[in-house]
Image (cartoon, rainbow, N blue to C red; front, side, top):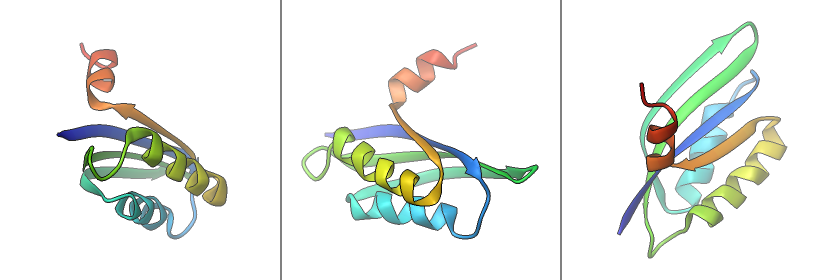
Length: 91
């Protein structure tokens, strides 16, 4: 079964942030389906749509790996299931 999650990241901008997050996602056998990033006033913000097969990885495993990446890069990285994200951001 395929699971979709939303990965958000926020922190001071520096080179390689998107690459670091994407590399971690790929290392967890997950796929980056779409990504949007902005840098404003020296702050990096990113929303990444990620999907994975539950037989290859878990949301908890992805979240733990991204937590390490966040510590290494100075980013606050959060992972939410797509259904929760959509529910929280509906109009």
